[in-house]
Image 1 (cartoon, rainbow, N blue to C red):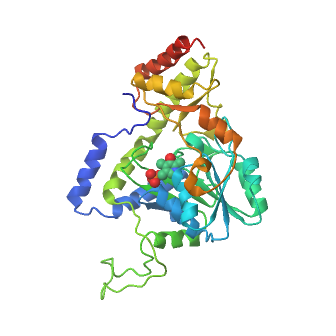
Image 2: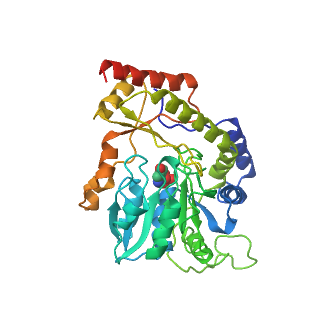
Length: 377
Ligand SMILES: *Cc1c(COP(=O)(O)O)cnc(C)c1O
């Protein structure tokens, strides 16, 4: 079976993990620190704004506390978002408001958001779909004019840039994922960007029990190192030196990963453009850089589900991201969002990962063309 997503790990990662074993310190230590520094540099921001954590979902949940979002506040989330984004809002007791997205890019626009803004709106929690940046100038301008916060779910955007700025560093908070299905992987892990430095310090404590003092959990204090004080009921969400050692190597490889993904994206574009019942993903703006996390096509003829089954029978696994959250009963939101619903019915994400061979990519393309012949479309 050709996987839709797949990590690329090798000897280099194992070599670094061996060093961590030898050091006898597996917890959060020097290596996590090195990764934070290198990731901040990769994003082009100061290290004091960056914090690693156990996973990206932790960052989504914590963003509510960091931005002091209350029970009476409304948070706008594009319906085509990751389930954890909406869960974060509901878990906080805040009011979840879904908005529509562009039917072709599946990214949210300033206009989609503006339609859902009320006097109670406190933030927009947006997503850069498949690593293609949203139009952040328009969104930030609109958000500023209504005085609402912007949270960027950049889980798919580890190398994405909007007009030279890393996705996730444009709004008030950005969050990245390094889980097993992402581009830069370390098993599980995430990173959080907080624009406001005071809030960044608050976030750091929130991720470690709310501890205020070095004692209790540190050997850097000369006496009574078991005493401590806390300022809040913090969580415990950290990376450790094993996962960070993997992430460091993966960060070195990131550029080659993205280059290969771009190549695959271009091969699909070049060879599927003649298939007249398929819409290709919209071209990426010249002033933007994608991470090429998804390659999504859209069927014009209600054949999406049949195509997915046909490809699966031919050992090609595809999927659709993201199932509309306004269709999930548990959220209790009754709304009709036509663009999101169109996208949900017609979009299919084809395999894209750096380990795919050209032969595999052409095999997938051939099978899609074979499907056209069988259905005479
Ligand atoms: C993977 C993903 C997440 C969650 O990341 P974890 O690190 O697995 O918690 C959140 N948002 C999006 C868009 C994702 O793709």
